[in-house]
Image (cartoon, rainbow, N blue to C red; front, side, top):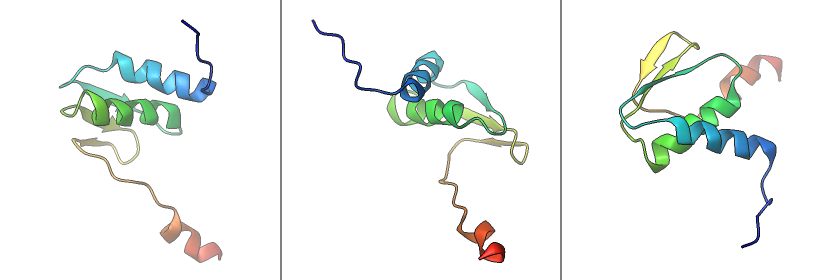
Length: 78
């Protein structure tokens, strides 16, 4: 069996984080932690749909996620 290395270190880290998450848990996500969030979302979309996300951004506890868009933030500078 050949070992595939067709992935980046960032993808590997996100998958390792994802594999640690158990369905129904409360998981934490800090500020400026995109790899952690990628792992959390991967877990939610694959095997842990009932996790809760405690976010440092806004100090919230969420059961669902939404994409972050910068469009409305960028307008004052355009």
